[in-house]
Amino acid sequence: MRPLGCKPWSSRSPSRSNESNRSRPSEPRAWLPATEVDQPKLHIYGFADMGAQYLGTAEGDLHDFIASAPAFAVGNINLYFDAHPSPSWRALVETRYGLFPHQTWSGLDQVDNRFMDTSSPSGRAYAIWSGMVLERAWLQWTYRGWFALQVGYLLTPYGIWNVDHGTPTLISLVLPSLQVEEAIPQHQVGAQILGVVPIDNWEVGYHAYLTNGRNGFAPDPDWRKGVGGRLLLRRMGDLRVLLGASGYFGSMHKDVMQLRISTDATTGAQTASFVRSDWAADGGYAADEWSLGGDISLDYKGWRFRGETMVRHVRYADGKHEHKTFGDPFSMIPNHYRHYAYAILAYRFARHFEPYVFIDYNDADPQISLNKMGICYSAGLNVYFTATAMLKLQYAEQTFSHSENGQMDMHFATGRLVLVF
Image (cartoon, rainbow, N blue to C red; front, side):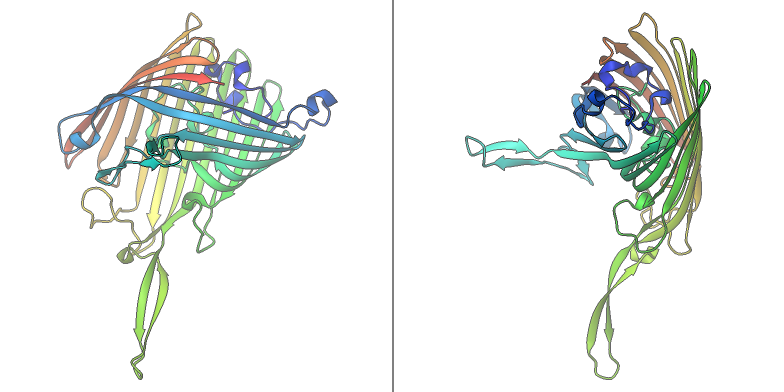
């Protein structure tokens, strides 16, 4: 959320943020006066959003499971720990706090995370065991503005949403399907190089990374890694333009440990051993995947436009296709392509009000049917009380249609009061 080498959020309006304010390596501070270099080495800042939401569906098999009455909600509570121990070194940790997984669904059961707090003054009060999500945690060394190295748990640099990332800077509360379904993994463990080069009123930036890919923290049984990057061209001035292109190639797999018992033909003695397997018959899978996408951001006076498109291809190894988690549990997910696109148009007037419209498209969900289409129509209003306090309201209609089961619709309304601190 907070750009490298920039002031905290409180000094700028989150509503005006686009990739011109996005993360980029900071210039070394060796030339700064000692009074600036000797400032506190650790900064703590963040944001929180709270509000209410409602999700409804058409009558059908999933209505009772998905639909919910209007209810208040605790959204994001994100804290950033930003350390600059020396001019060229930086560490950033972003954490999100919440009440999850309390009252969320695990299979067909609702999680109850209450426990008896025996250390409370009364000795028998109840408390909710809440959760924390690590959004990112990395170490960075900066050589110059055109070269920096990051190592750790990274927010993958792709598109618009994963870079802008937080509620105060994003226009829409509802995420596009390419972000929800992670056409490119949102988080990855690994290393990346990044930089930006200014050319007159333009900037050329880049990211290139090597990671564990979609397999995350799990020990990798082979040398298959995730590789990818992002190129961007940014124009500053009254008309701010950003053109971006992102790509990712990696593998995804699930290994299952199988207990194998062998019997000696001569003695009849039996020995047991564990064998790692990724065959579908054993419950595992293995596949290669790639994703390519492009995005555009335009800002002119009160107008803001955001658009993005992406294609993803998954190809499974022979005999190692993944089982479907929806529909027929004995069927396999075929090799497939998925296509995504969205567009947002917003206009801010009278300093405080920003209405917008949003349309999102995706197709060919292999979990349900390869002949499927999903379209989301949405409209919202952002009200900026100050540069750090805002109200966000949004309504969305989501339609899923495919030839097998007809059509299923959902409608969603949400509102969030957002505060940056």
